[in-house]
Amino acid sequence: MTTRGARCLLVLSLLAWSGTAWGQTKMTIATGVDPVFSAYYVAQQEGLFKKHGLDVRINTGPSGSAMVSFLVNGQIESAFGSEIAGVSNHNLDPNVVVVAQATRLVRWIALLGRNIDNLDQLKGKKVGVARGSGGEVFWLAMLDKLKLNPADYTVVNVEAPEMVAALERGNIDAYAVWEPWVTRGLAAVKNTKVLKDQEGILEQGVYIYMNLGWIRKNPAQAESFMRALVEATDLINKDRQRAAKDVSDFLKNLDPALVEQLMTKLRFEVVLDDFTISLFRLAEAQLKQQGKLTKPLDYREFIYPDVLRKVQPAKVNYTP
Image (cartoon, rainbow, N blue to C red; front, side):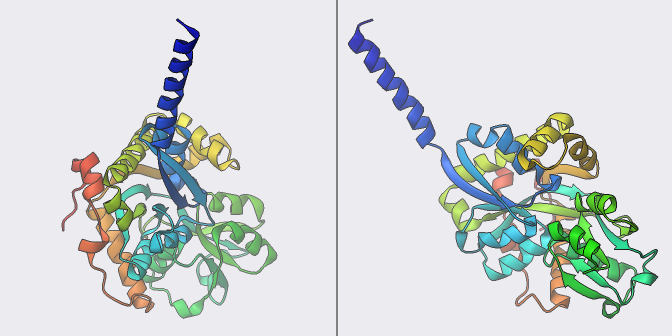
């Protein structure tokens, strides 16, 4: 081959590589920092987003639910959070829609108390709850299920990462929270115990939300995003040890063995079913009761099944 021919081949190779890089659609997605959100982390660590033509940046915050608000006005393209966060933010901006449930919380959330032996002793105490989170859904459901009087407790708005320190300082006497903050609180603060867990109260879900305006402008990319998450979920279920390492590597502050242990308290499945709808109805009722829902929730607008239906049609099986 001549020198000129070699140079031409090199230029063509660089152009081909650059075209691939430039062809990646940029996305910013956001969530919290615990294994509930494993599908995002695994898809990133395993290169599944890139495989499907997406250049994804993951922003993390104190909770997944706190990050759902960034979908309002299209500040990000997708978020991973609780049902109450989705309902309240859709109420602000109809472009905030749920496209799938991705994780089911089986034994994930609990109420911890310090120097308290039972729920009777919790009366008159300060309870830390992250407003708009799955922890608040659990707390309100527990009050309702056990016929407890909300006026007996002082609820303090505390984000999950601050709860352990707040409990240790005595700023709060108890908190309702999800893992790993349950395990961390029990390990770090003396005389702390679980007062009530999810068993007999409710199971919960965590959901993939997207900005509808972005989906309509980028339908192929939205489908690719969903395919990456479905593949990540398949990997989580087939190779839990590998997935746990991916989550640990992304979060950098959780040991892989602990992640793998915590994952046993979760069920990973990308789906839109009647269980999904039932939990949104619960969240809607809780928000109405608190006077935080300014208009009725239109499920035909809030639930957007088209993206998942293109990828896994059998997983869209809820009653309209």
